[in-house]
Length: 147
Image (cartoon, rainbow, N blue to C red; front, top):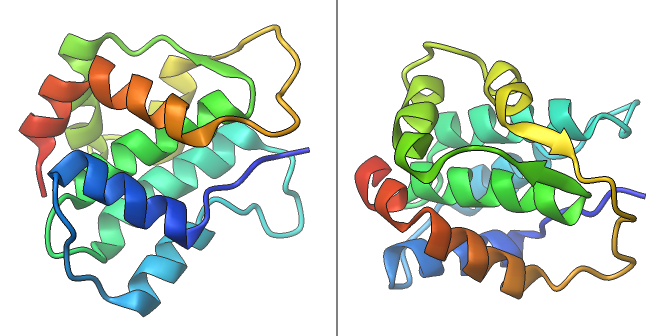
């Protein structure tokens, strides 16, 4: 079973990373959220996380905080699906910007920082707790990647 973030989850995450409610384009937000799904083969968590990271950054549905939202959301997607994230906080901004500037693909970036956690995937993960942990750990990177 794979857990997915909803449009409402992404709206909440954007509020967490920007500390405010931002205007957004609903069609782009919905399309960006759907990048998590691997149509025809929804069993590739790493590939789906990479597609999400890259696609969400490209679509930019929010008036601000798009890269930060993509960073936190992609890492959350990995964690709620049983992966550990090895991305060092001091390298996170550069890692995300490399995807934003097309220095590497989302799939390449995700494969560099995700390892199976070796624990069962929670039946019902505590999403907001996981997001808060990620936001606290990567606060400096979130501030640097901005938009």
